[in-house]
Image (cartoon, rainbow, N blue to C red; front, top):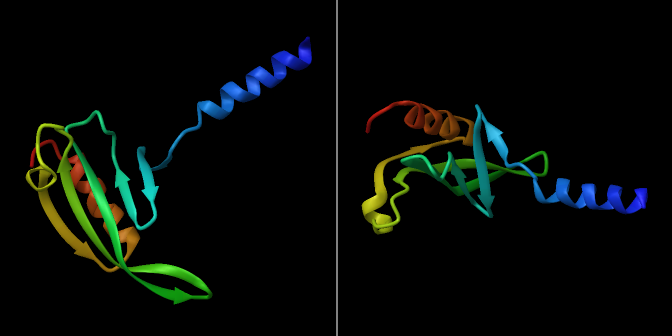
Length: 106
């Protein structure tokens, strides 16, 4: 009986997995696209890795396009984009994304 309870608890824990975060906001990745921010907020940021370089056998982002997007489902994807930029590293792109989402307007 106790064994069944432990298995059930393990299943519930697996379902409640959390997203990776950066400075307190969630990061969701699908291949070379990363979404940063909470989908229930007014805006999120989409990061697209467009170029990579090899360093010590690892692919490192060398060109990242950044799009601040409204989360309003009524808007088309093109209308949802309110700000864009491009950076040469994922770290710089995430920093810009965090600044954009931290500001109240725009």
